[in-house]
Image (tube, rainbow, N blue to C red; front, side, top):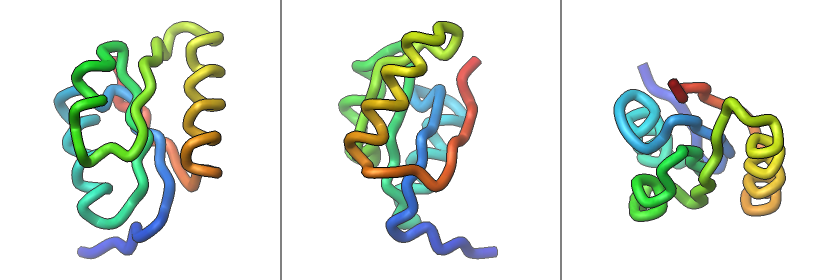
Length: 86
């Protein structure tokens, strides 16, 4: 099975480790532009697969709003969201 994600823009929550990190890195390998969200900014900011990184607490509405605004500002839009936090 193959996917054409070239140029597609995604937010990946929980991108600092585990499934979220693996999905984000794989999407980037397939050409997607990834905005990584995690509580631990250091874990995502140093990963070259992620075009954009934002510290977000998905349990806090204001933090999510900030993350959405930052991701849209950086990527110029979104095609999808992978919710892997928690």
